[in-house]
Length: 400
Image (cartoon, rainbow, N blue to C red; front, side):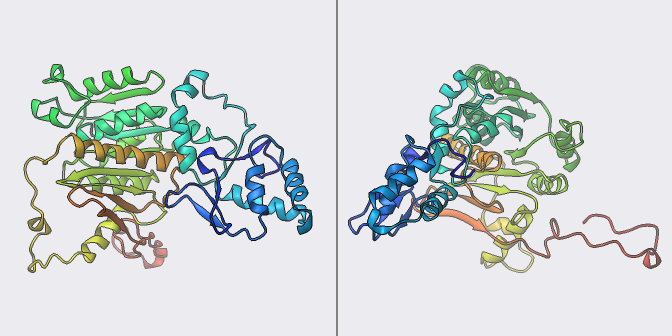
């Protein structure tokens, strides 16, 4: 969106600028990753950001700045370029943009606080500050697993206004679930989790289409069937993202990576391992896939294992996953946050990474990032088929 196309350009309220003691202009708030500092020796940038208050058209902003600094002989294109730079950096919105027709007045009231948060974190030009919310309303998400992480993620996504959520969960509610799976109550013990999930989510937000099925994922074919089960008329995947919150079978993340690479579906997976809570975010063709990231992390760590010794001996797995409402809620919140990143582009974080936190050591973040590996067995570029004269045997090599 160009500056001239805006009715009344305005610095976003959350990005309101201030002037430092040495005359520089700081804009975008003091949050790392958002704010910036602009040198302003002549003072006209400060005049510019103050003039962009949503009461003037772009031409009137230019006139205001040049009129207040006649001694500088500022050229209009230079002022417009500065406005364009601020817009491209994500600090400007159109105060005159009409509300989107796709969102009712009730929906706008319901999600008004979420809109302002996304506006704060959004660093790309938009025609309206409501654009990310509209994208979320259009989105269709497949959630596999509705336990501690999954039920929290489902609750947060539905509360945030996702358009459609399909949940898959095979288990029933057990008493031992209730210390962390806060979508359920004591009255739900013995009830299929999917029934309790659907009832709770539909009561939370009638504006979200919530569906589900009681089903166990036993292999990649099951995930593929789930993803393609809602395919559109053109055969494209029917879901905009897959969220994986199941922790069994142990190979389910590998299956999800395989199926999402084949279908081109963005996906995220989250969970907790003791006090470590994290989420992985992946988009086929952009950055590392899950296998790339896992292999890079194995190489990075020095567990001092003997030859042939399994890495699980360094961090043993038990029949149950030690957890409470805090770790489950944090991991579910991170998974919902990852979904917003994938669906709305807010915040603008490149996929192919894992991030989270270590509850044992405040200030010790979990962050894994690796470039895509050319030798990755999952996402390496496909090898061209040999020429017909070079073929041998009854067929080509199958997928690894």
